[in-house]
Image (cartoon, rainbow over all chains, first blue to last red; front, top):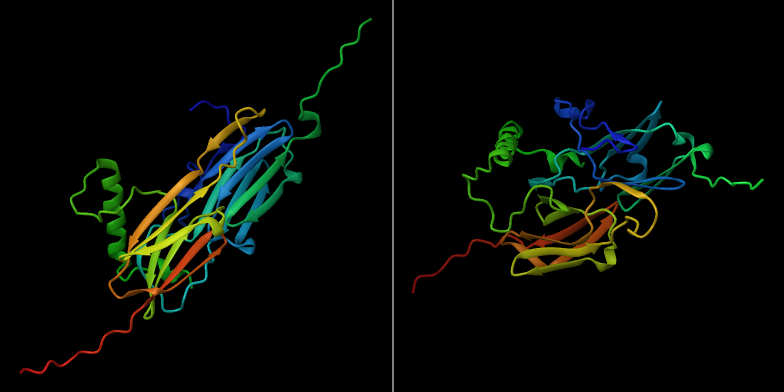
Length: 132
Length: 150
């Protein structure tokens, strides 16, 4: 893969691939796109309520963790399951021109919408050319 | 709570089942017949099915859809869920770059065979946090009937 990503996906190399049963997590699917003022990240986290979602920025690493909390009947017995782990986890490395202090997060219908703005000095600007 | 959906009676054998599935994914061996309506792993939406004494509970993990436009049907014991998810990506005309494009957009459809005692007249569906829950009632177990010999 060409290394053009501004946010490098570390989920597959980091501790997300843990072997113990309790720490197994799913890697949520994401869309990532960029415009002049920042990066938008959309992540599918079905079943995760607002208080089950945890977003952390540590240095230049953005960590998304979510726990599924879909209410189920007490006596429910599973007969078939494609979702077998009730947790999502994925981490991204942010690049320097992004401003982690101003990340805006919105969770709706199981889709996390993250807006990571660029630092003011990193936004493209037009340079006036003076005629002299 | 939610764990009950994930706990299989034989968790130990469940691990073998998972291993078998992973090997099948790699080698494409399908020694065991699968359901005629089974789909490839990772198909949208993922589905979990559970039973209680009085209902069959189907959970479809379908985030970011318009719940009013989802079509849920039961026809001859087949529950089908279909709908459409709009793409959230910017148009190609707009400035910017798309780096990851993993989320499904467009039409989706899943079908599940319900058990024989499912009662299609007792269905309710709800959508919460991106999970569509379809609860299908079960008919009361018929009492054994004595047949008189003429």
